[in-house]
Image (cartoon, rainbow, N blue to C red; front, side):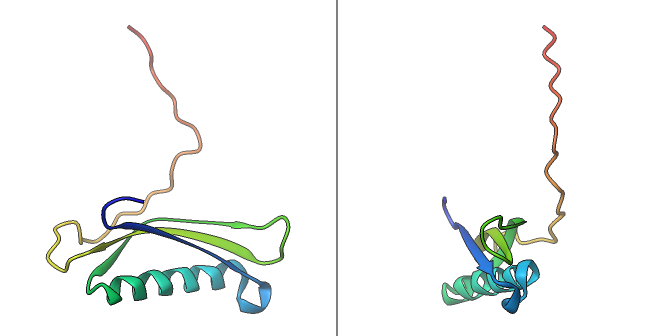
Amino acid sequence: MGPDTYTVSVHAAPARGGESGARKIALTEANEYCARLGREILVSNLSSHRSTHFPGGTVEATFNCLSKEDPSLKRPKYQKEPDVVIEDRRD
């Protein structure tokens, strides 16, 4: 997706835990990928939804693989993206 930025999408059937199982698998895969690169994971976005076509759930994780010294590696503050954005367009 960009420099040191990656995404993984996982669908898990109910037998594999559905939405929560997909979240665990996605984060495990992302963490293992960064570890293979000798880097640390920093999750920047995590979204999930239930499939209308298949039982279970899907999770998409966007993450960075950063060096251990990278100043961006700090305690993240997750916030839900707003459903509505109001712009003031007065001139």
